[in-house]
Length: 414
Image (tube, rainbow, N blue to C red; front, side):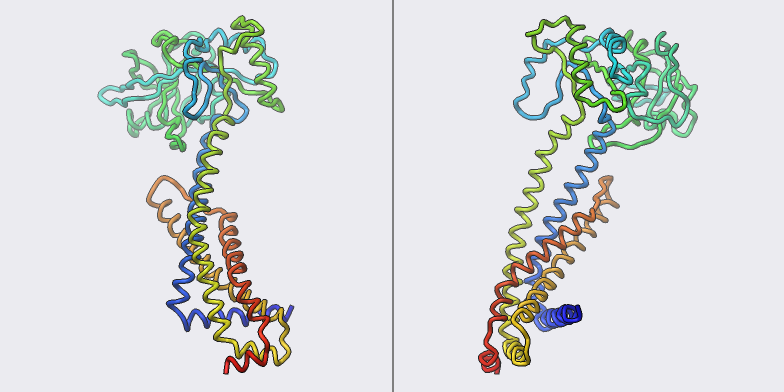
């Protein structure tokens, strides 16, 4: 243990001396490692931050929630829209049948959404997402109320003209004034505000409950032709019920409702959030590959720089190596001494690269709404890659130093 600590100390001193004596050469050589680590870790930091933000946004849709719609969720250029165009929209009658027949569903809700202008006296907000929702919508969709209350069963069933509005809508219409109890105008009709959602901010896709108005579907259906808008039935699974089990049950129920023959293709889609996650997996993989390719070239250049420093260091210290061997130093001692030095030099470059990434992350997080998160895994990745590059770059110079003949080394050094 003592010998190992002495070895590390000597390697540190030799490496530090090499940096001081040959500042320009060392800085230029380590710059390749620093740029390489910066490229790799910055790409993975952006990648991890994007992935975390996207998955957080997807999670708000619910991992144990299924969406019955006309259109299946899919990404890519080969989307066969012509197959789905003639499908019927999901209906309130479908939802009620599911509520009656399903044994695995914990809650079922229906909603539609249209964009409208919302007014209060002289104030108005354009392009607001107005949602018509059924009674159990609060059980399948994540949101919290900052003020007021949710729809009562009587209000939902009778189609009363009441609304729950998002935090941004409340601010836009009422500024600092109390929103609950006020009358807003949508579809040219007065609607009473009974609740305001808690401020939550935009998700990665720019969506937010802050920007929507919820109305009872029984009221909204009188203003909107539901055959002309996209409808959706949301079904939440009971605890311990998997999505696969619920999909199987819902498929049977929907086929029965639609009276489809056994050989007929489904004329509905049952979507789940994992479809979105899988669609982004390919993107994340491509970003990671690009990061390794860009950083790999810089690391290759940096590795050659480290190897050059070590070859020069071996040549400059040939006589010292000869003296060490004459005094009984073993080959492995010389080998490890130069390997430690190469790894130490490479780690310096890696740490510089990590510091640049950290500074960049702080600047971006403070100046934009996108937060870059440097994970411990990425820090260890940067340090680990730096150490590996140092090990690979130093192995040949270290091996050549360990094989020097002590007599020849002292004569050459003299």
